[in-house]
Image (cartoon, rainbow, N blue to C red; front, side, top):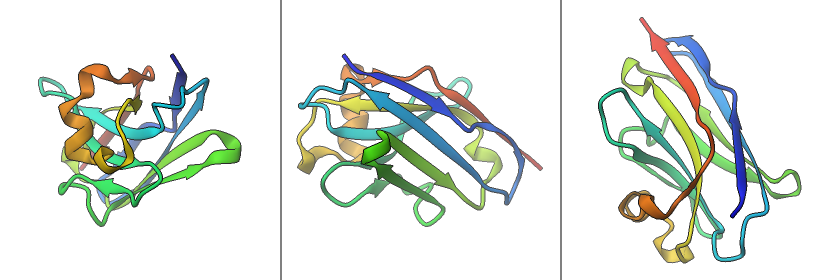
Length: 128
């Protein structure tokens, strides 16, 4: 089981930007699908963005505003969040999942989130 550690969360005004980072180590070969999830108070954990060998994928709610990227030499995956909205307020989690590349999509990882390895999360709070 790998280890993941998120950082970069904080408080920001609506319209602002944040960049989340997730350092990972010891990821097994069958868990190369990396994803960002978020969980707002009282809601289920939902997939936000994924990255693997294929093209990144995004939830409709963040498409065009968030960008996921990976720096493999640094074992780090990022989530650049621009034009933040009040509804982006949530705890954000980094995760690895045992799914092949073709299923490393937001819909795919959300359906198998029970099999994810998680970081501890980082809080993002957007205010008006």
